[in-house]
Amino acid sequence: MDKETWIPILTEYYNVKGDLVNRREVRELRINQGLTDNLFELKPLDDVTIEKESGQEVNFPKEISLEKAGRILGFAPYVIDNKNFKVKYQWAEIRDGKGVLLSSYTLLGEQYPLLVITQGAMPHANILSNVTKETIELGFADTEVEGKLIRFDIGGIKYMLTWQHNDIHFSCGGQLEKSELLKIPGKLVKADFKEV
Image (cartoon, rainbow, N blue to C red; front, side, top):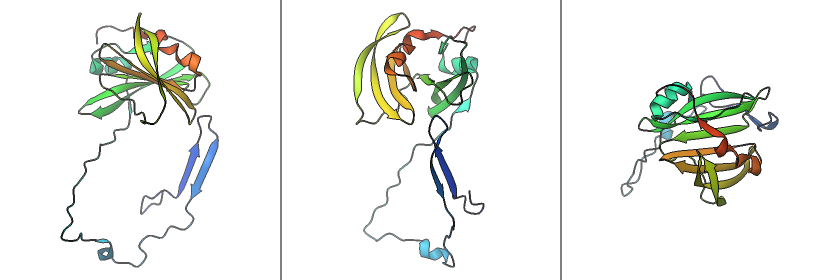
């Protein structure tokens, strides 16, 4: 970052395997050299109406304990019971204090998550309208639920699943093949801790 303007002068993009795929570098940053600020104060024409659009505030996920997430959600979160994963729990606020729990499952010794599971009381999967969605039946919490399978194949994420159960919205996705991802909902169990 440039120390005065806070403009990125070096940006690197990596794929999920950690390989550098793109690098951009600004070699000579010149901004408003010798120009007065009043040149950048543009006044609208008299017959122009300006409407301000209130953008959605972005809240970055924060690490959270599973127990605290359960207290906020009002239910014991669903987890994969497997010792081969390093698990990171994060809370992502969406709006009005409501949010979702993100659980990132990384195989021991690996750098990037193999699987990310989200769960919360509100819809939270940002899915483009032009992607292909396939309706499927999933086994979850000892019952059959209807879900959507979305093919991504972007940035290491191959597929994503979304479903709803007891007014809780779930999604999972990652680097798994379709057949493996379809098994994930059936592997989820409620977290094993006392009252939330």
